[in-house]
Length: 502
Ligand code: ME8
Image 1 (spheres, rainbow, N blue to C red):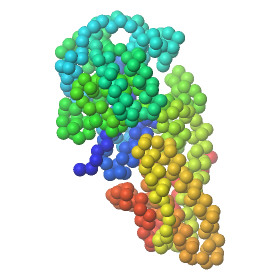
Image 2: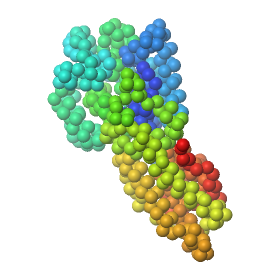
Image 3: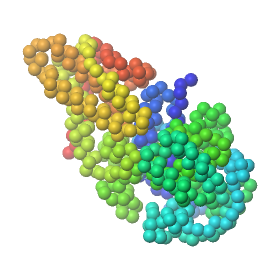
């Protein structure tokens, strides 16, 4: 059986359509999923929608659908799913927390935690931001306001069920200490350690006032706090309480990708819940940064929320994912800039990659009748090793830098060899060797590029006379050997990959 790899994105609220922020996390996940498949692993890739949230209920009401919340959720979830499909996302399951499977999993999970003695009844009195659906202490606030919404949190007092989160303080700290790869990147690790040590409290995990959400097992007068239910989606997604065989194969997750806004939930609450339920913890939680759009925070009120579908119609999903992953270093905060997107399109894509492919194929048509010439020696293994290391460490931006270094070197090689001069001088052997090296390098570039820009890579394979399914039926180890491109096979220049824009 092949090795497995299980990765997840957050499940998103459906109170609006996907923004470029949501698409970013999902693009990053898709890139990693494709790379892991390229290594021959059996990949489970989960994304989906977080539907038991008060935010969704409010959005349904605002749309005049308060009597048809489920119908509203169905439509919105379908919209999210369609969006991810149209963006070329290769998730293996799209989970919705209103699914029957998920309710089963939540019930089974709750019972385990309760049996462990980690649920108790108490009175919650404190601060609550309804927009975040999160509790805050005075310490968390900025000038008395929610740090995310800049609004005054509500003071609430309610009889709730509590989860004994603080019972796991030492165990969490020990786990993070012993497993430095658990929270990534490093800055986030310091942040979470400080939170666990100094600020973490038990959390209320039920609400009496809520009408939407999963009822507390055994006490239908309460509904589960949405985060307690939402986090469980990650195990529902691989069969917890419904398909034990699948669950044993895929859990724990190899990678859980989140934005840094939901770090605490994923690196404190979630692992403590798992410890309580006696389940293993995910291997890595990787929190990426937040980005602004053209220097401004993205918000509905500013009207600057970027729709990834509209932008992809103008460019293409490949181009958007390339831009976002190259320009915003994974883990850092950044800015999504329309000007830089355009500049990178023109420079990196049209001038550097597109031009390289076009030039090499034009020369092959001209000098060797569009046939791959006899094999010649070349070197690419060093780049593969660096690329692989970067991909293993989830340094995606570095991996793109490595690919672009190859592209630049290859463009320089053309300038240096001057195939057109070799043709004039009738230096056939040298001309053919040069063309072989160039064509074979394009094949390697296409392979490395595939997780990031699948359509572009597949077009490159086609131009090189390779069949996409056949290419991927071999292992990456055999693909990165030098000299796989067969002499005598035909290539076809076709349309430019990145035509100049008006
Ligand atoms: O938090 N920059 O869902 P959500 C980078 N349902 N990433 C961004 C972004 C930006 N400007 N805007 C959004 C929730 N994101 C919960 C999660 S998981 C059990 C429950 C991405 O719809 C980023 O991944 O508010 C962030 O963590 C996520 O969208 C929040 O999505």
